Length: 120
Length: 106
Image (cartoon, rainbow over all chains, first blue to last red; front, top):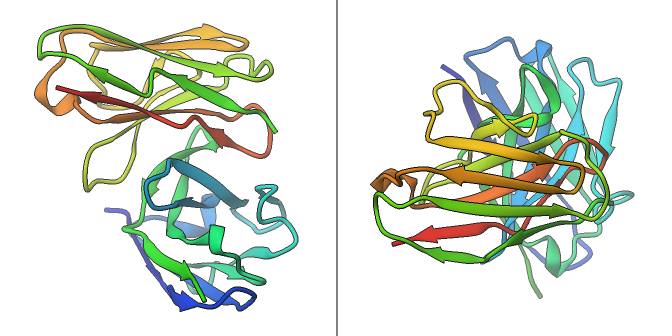
């Protein structure tokens, strides 16, 4: 059974940083690409970043490019999202998501989400 | 980036009825279009991918169609568990993008 547990969220001021972690279990983590997806309060789903299974390919939403960095440690079954220069519009629940087995671009299993609040 | 636009924002229907949800892309995404269902308090669930292929375990009352820039999701004979928010998503281009969602309510 796939299990994804996010941590590292919280309340920060604009311009500060946070690092989210996602510990995966119940599947072969090193064989799957992973995504971060977020949902701001009252808004829809917003894809943030992707990393392929071996970490050699990464893609980002335009809104976070240059500020956020996705990474993974397959030896620890852990996905990360380093978020720098945070802005108020980064406030959202952040989800760790596995790719579907058929395509990097599809979303399969989701974590429970972690809240990030950026406020002065 | 490819902008995905869903309509309508909200659909009010009764159980047993059928509904059609629309999704438009700002440029062609070929057939690389997916639909997700999000029920309150739950994670999104993949319903349809490749424009019309149902994901594992998805009942036949869900069907997808379209290509290029215009896509639809049809739900026949709505069940109580189908009242949810539905999102379309393109995966033809990076960055991946979602539509704003359509809420199907009673």
